[in-house]
Image 1 (cartoon, one colour):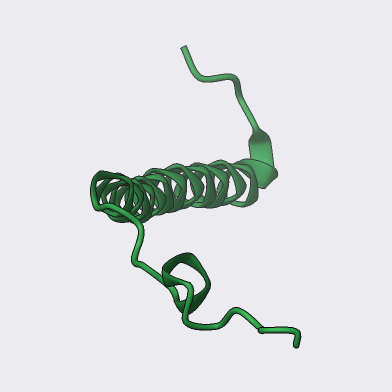
Image 2 (cartoon, one colour):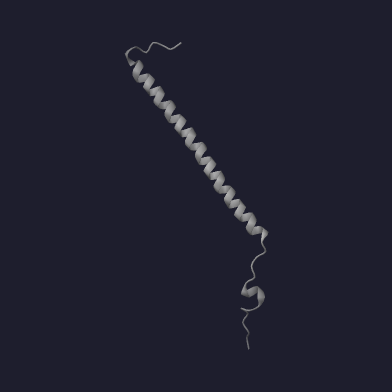
Length: 71
């Protein structure tokens, strides 16, 4: 099944092995980062929905305390 690599067999197999290890590391890092970003997004969306559910706080301008009187 495996082709005859001659005197380069060790070097070629090590290169294949290193490539597979690096690819596996990249896949693992991508999945891990995706989970972290998904968790951050969930936190941000929860904050936004909680803020949207609360009525806006009254300010001085909406209560008339900051109005100027010209006179």
